[in-house]
Image (cartoon, rainbow over all chains, first blue to last red):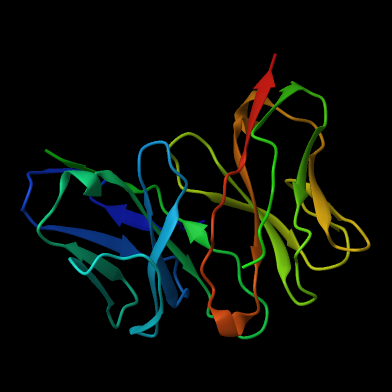
Length: 115
Length: 112
C-alpha cells in the first residue's frame, strides 16, 4: 500500500540558511500534519492542513511556515535556521475527521542537521 | 488534553505476551484512547484505538477498564521487531483538532 512520502530524507544546512521539506500524503488523504522530534525527545505537533487551509497550529516557530497545495501535498518552509532546529521532521496524513478522530499515518521523516 | 502515565520501560521475552499499561484517570467520556509506537527513528506507527469497549486487530488488543481510567495494550506474541517506544494518547473530540499529543511513552525491549 502507498505510504506517506517525504523528501528529502536527509538535509544539511548552515545557520541562517533556509530549508524546504516536502510531504506527499497517502492517496485520498486530505489532511496533513507536521511534527518535529528533537534528539531524545518525543514528537511535537507543529501544524496541520485540511483542504489547503490551516486547521490547527502547535508550537511552530514564526520562522517556519507551511502550506498545502491543490494536490494535497504540503511543504514546510524554514528560514533563519538555528542549531536547535536540528531534528527529525515527520509528516503524517489522514482522512478528514468529523466526529471520530482518524488515525494518522506517518512518513519516514526528514532528518535536518543545522551546522 | 487528558494526561497519560506510562511506565518508563519494560522488558518482555520473545514469544511471550507484552502487556503495556497506561493510566488516564482524567479522561473525559468522549475522549478516545489511541496507541502508537515508534521504532528507532522511524515514523510513529498507529496500532489501535478504542473508546469504551475492548478492541482487537491484527497487531494488538486494547483492554479499557470499565471506569475508563486505565487501559492495557497487549501484544500477544512479542517479537524482536516489536522493540519500540509505545505511546498511549488520549484524543479529545474533533472540535479540538486532530493533532496527536505525544507524552513520555514506554520503551519496550523484547529479548530473545
